[in-house]
Length: 112
Length: 114
Image 1 (cartoon, rainbow over the protein chains, first blue to last red):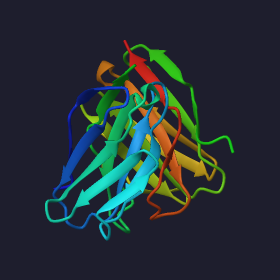
Image 2: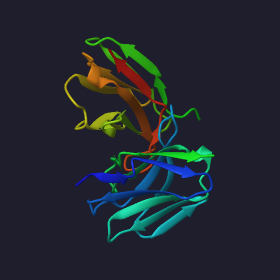
Image 3: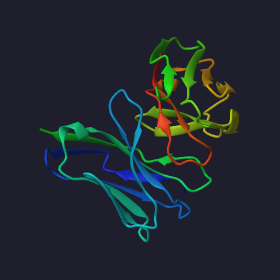
């Protein structure tokens, strides 16, 4: 029940296109859903996060969409750029739990 | 701010040898996490500390793994004896306080056990 399922495992998008990565969870206690971005040879870094009191959060070209009833959330990267090529991890946790439960990651390649 | 500092960046060791990975969290951060990343299992939380005290080590795979945090600015993850299946990237992360949702990761230590 602590799992977060992420798809797809890998994704190739043309420059300027929209990248979409999906995650699903089971534990209804989760109340914080961050996305982490990891470049090769680097540690993951927080990209954007959402709490379930809103259905969408946008920061620049990055948007999280959240569907509480379906227990799903997704990351949309608009106007994808080659510099966005990285591995993206969704995660979930709840207040007081402190552990981040990570998805398995999506390797995104944006072709020039 | 230098961020979370891990050493070494790369470690190659022979099976059976002891391996020690080191981490310096961000100054002022009170929570520290050790993660392991593999292709098969993704990012796994091994253990975390609050105020230098181990809180949850349920992710530590076996007794061969141990972690210490003798003070607020230093932590070690030790594997003794090491095995080829321990080959992975090990990340240390820190957060400002217990219960904080954002973790700041180091660059990781790539461990290869041959």
